[in-house]
Length: 449
Ligand code: UDX
Image (cartoon, rainbow, N blue to C red):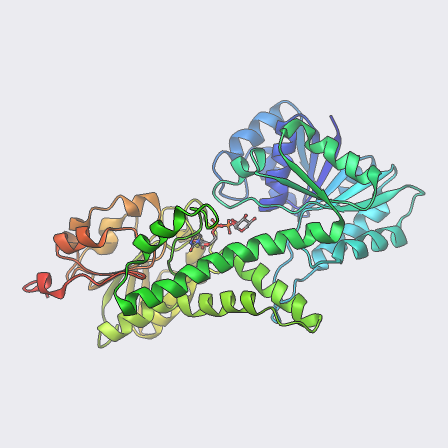
């Protein structure tokens, strides 16, 4: 058992803290927000994440985890302090490291024992060298502090499972002492550990995320070509996936990648390369394809319809992916403003993301258009002229093709997630546009428009 402190209670920090407690460590999570701390002590998570609150309550009850704003008390005698604060993207694509710097300063002023500081946040290669120097420069007590890199690979919606059963733990250290101390923290997880130097660990995070982003953009690029040459991207992906070298995962073409990692980490690595006078062409291509892909459905719909003005538009799904209430870089945020500008009356359904979206676009008039949030799919579809699908929530995938025909005024669907079989939509008499697949035969629509 180790005494751990975790700085930051966002996705990375909170999930890590709770999982460390779950495997038996003594954990104190630090956040600057007093209200958030109170809520967490009551077992309520500030983020929507399956299974997290159960573990928060269980480990709080046994005293293995606590939450505080008192960083001095938390850091003072911790064996290991994890930093999991945000590194948001700046307008030029670089990462904003001010939260990391603030925590580093607080650590330097608080630690009274030898301590390993572990950076879980995604930071530009070389940052942890600077963090170590920075802490040492500001140290108040005569103690040993080293910094390790330990990037996080959890995906939102499956964060707890991803942490407890990670495919690998990446440890980046510069001394045996640091390596052994961090290995010991992970020992109870019984997971494969890859131990490298600090800069390689920092790079593994970017290289992994950007590779996955590249894979998605590649499939989206091929999907767009499939549409032009009459191939079907899902059949193509299936055929590719049998090759172990390609793998079965992350081959889904769609409306582009969103979320807190891929968009930010692709731009950050591209920026790092530029700083070193190098053009990272592959990653740049992934970014460019993704930018266009987010508007591909809107462009298709604009070609198909004379105008959106005065049309009732059903929007199914707002979050960047299912299983989260997160809207960061979601396709909905790019498309909905355009539809509103064009004077569309939007009826949006999302099982958990509607409140967050309403904070950006409250219900009511927006210029010529309007925004209404509804409680279920049927209410969104009722009398609609066109429907956009932005997120493949289970609740949306469960909607039968016939429902579009039954509820909509004109069964015209633009699906950014390829959730239906083209044949099924055709049979149901729905005009169905998706990504990288053929459009259903207009003939079946005779008499419904
Ligand atoms: C990702 C990584 O998976 C995770 O390892 C890293 O630590 C953080 O970034 P996350 O952003 O939570 O996790 O979600 P993920 O499931 O990877 O999806 C990211 C985006 O890519 C979503 O918008 C998703 O819809 C899209 N995506 C994913 C595709 O368009 N096609 C795919 O085949 C897979």
